[in-house]
Amino acid sequence: MNALHSSPMLSWLLSYLVNALWQIPLVFAAAWIAARMLRRATPLAEHRAWVGALLLEVVLPACDLRFATLLSRIAFWISPWFWQKGSSGNGRVRVLLGPGEINGNLLHLPSALVTGIAVAYGCTVLYFAGRLAWGLFETHALARSAARIALTGESALRWTKHRRRLGIPALPPEIAVSPRAIGPVTIRLRRGLLLLPPAFLEEIAPDDLDAVLAHELVHVARYDFAKNLFYGLVSLPVVWHPLLWRTRARVAESRELICDAIAANIIAADAVAGRRQYAQSLLRLASMLFTRPPGAALHAIGIFSFSPKSGNPDSRTFERRIMTLTRKPVQMSGARRIVVATACCALALATCASALALRTDVSATTAANANGKRAKIHVESRVMAIQKISGDNPVYPQEARAKKIQGAVVLTAIIGKDGTIENLLVVKTPDPSLAESAIKAVRTWRYRPYLLNGDPVEVETTVNVVYSLEG
Image (cartoon, rainbow, N blue to C red; front, side, top):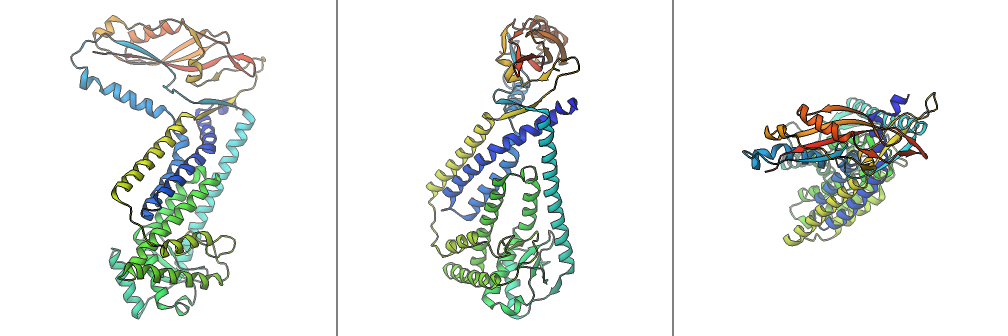
């Protein structure tokens, strides 16, 4: 069990969850500000901001400043090819405790709490993954059982015209009717399927049907069903966070604004008339669907987003869509676009930098062993860096410098309760002489005792001694 608690993977998972707690609100706030700045631009710009926020909310908690260290090491290895060729160099030595992390905090949690969090998180992810899989299975079964129909007359002509204008391949999406459909929705990854409620074609006016056909074809042309499935899959690691669901809702809202704008443009030659006609069709469709009984919750993309409780169109999203269609579009000047884009990029960089700088790492505390002594714990290198109080600096061996041998000597160190180096092990070295030099210096180092709950404990850490040539 102690091996499980000290597992690097478990520590990484706990660090991911702890950082996701506060980094997701940070990213959401930044995305909200960016979206407000981009509302005067096209809906596509706002949609991209929310999609970027969604991906950052998933990825950013897993990142730390090791990426910057990795880049610096790559630059270090390739630098001789550009400005050190043919130079003997005097050489220098840099000492990095651990893999080069330079910032952050460390949080110790009791082993029982660590185990409980890991089990609860695993169950949560499995539950939502199972629900997503079941929804896809139900949607696939529904697609197979739905009755296919064919449009006729003017509706068929408009369907073909919109499809060609949107560049949809020659194999068009199918249309089917099912009693389980709440409203018009598009499903299936390949060759989209437009699913309609029973008697929908008989009840709807021709202009309103034109709006539905145009909107759903835009979803097909944009591959929105596949994108929505992708967002659901990548969101699983942080699906437990409430603001993740808010971000998903913003992604869906901005996606519908894009489809509304495109559909309004293709149903009428005049842009203003098309937006007015499309908005009126949305109002009539919402009134018609509001009276229908709730249906099955499907993994689908449609002209309306439905409330999971009532089965009715989402009123907040619907209101904004109508307001956007009826408001006169304002074109942003080129200079303002550049300023807004620059501000959004700066906001994104500041958010990522803040998240990385304030990152917290988590490790589990271990219980006392049978002899009443605490087992050694692994402490992040940046914490041990400030504990060092004395010791010699490594010396670059003359022979290695003459042969232009350089690189990093990686050591694992056990620091005793009194702060002395008790054990050193070479993990990696470019040359034995460099390893000998590093070990000779590191053995002289002394640390302040590391305290855990007020008691000194043995500490395991990593030491990198980097030998580099400089011209």
